[in-house]
Image (cartoon, rainbow, N blue to C red; front, side):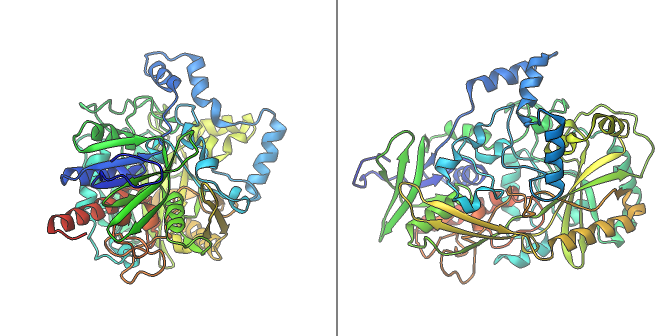
Length: 560
């Protein structure tokens, strides 16, 4: 594929993919495996040079205090105690995010979110609303929590797919992710695809709780609870692909060993394969489809004049907001209200009741470790349990407590846990997006309002957890704390181009084709018609693989 200004080049690549995040690399990997030529267009902000140097220092036997300070220095802790207290009061009053997922860093660097106001602009109405965005190589996978859960059978009710339709595609995604899954009661709800040969570390505070769940398996099953170890995209053992988990406890700051999956892993592997070309430095603004002619319109980083690229097909994997911007700008749908979904997220401080005082107080792992799936009032909920690490405290805003209380919490640390309670999209904040046609890049107006019954559902969940504390082995210490003023995390925005058996407007058909187009496919979160309570990345990758596989099959039959 070659570029030119003002006209569409004659040379045509088989498929153009936009975006290098999990959706983009999953679709590209399948397309290349099917023998198709792929060019992946990406803005692709690279990590700064000093990031690798810091990682190497942190991998040494005794990293310096300066390196550790650099790692944690971006947490943005208030300089004065008074500022900290005022911030905490605003957070508890729901005026400021208690959990900010939109400014997460990797190894102390904010490169993942650099430039988003220019490349994925939000209008003032949405500027204060939580919305994770990235223009980096690998996208938001550079800073995600690595949690991977498929659709449960009941979740398919919101999708125009038969239950289990994504299972073979989950299996492919699991291999890309180096997914580590344990054989336990969670498999009753979240089917296993890739049981791991080696287990990930488990903090001492979690071990007695897991043992309690195993002893109470029958009681939990009668309550409709599926409980077990977290499913995580973490390389448990070293391999030819890279280091395994070293139990250093720095997970939430960005793994110095790069053992937490990033889409860059798959992208690097693709770059070594014939038939694939990575094109960083391009911001795709729109597409045009006229008969058999399909063209991408893109801006080169640092340049003003748009250029055009021809393709036989286009896969939109730029992230929900960017894919919406591209589709609405291209199909004359700017200004139309589009319903988006996100998971409302609540924080629950928990006290472990099962087991005695854990002997191992050292923190060897700081990602999610244990998980519950349960229902309240017929609504499925997902609860992830974390050990009380410094990074968790910072992210949750709890580190603003006085030092005396922090020391008391430290003494109780092996009994204190933090639960992240996630609600399905339909029971979460009401979110509307409108794309505003502006040059050279369309802006997005994002309106997010609290869900009418979200807080009631969260409180009902906390009461249920308290009532069943004996079987669960833990109890909530207070009412649920809303993560942001609107309730939703901003980290799981999906929808707008949702799959439909009878698509209208910008919706996608079952093949993934957007808004009545023939050769333009939505494969990222924008294609979701519904959002279950569990994390969405695994399903995004599986659906991207499904759509890519079906496109390749049609190509073999000679269909467009």
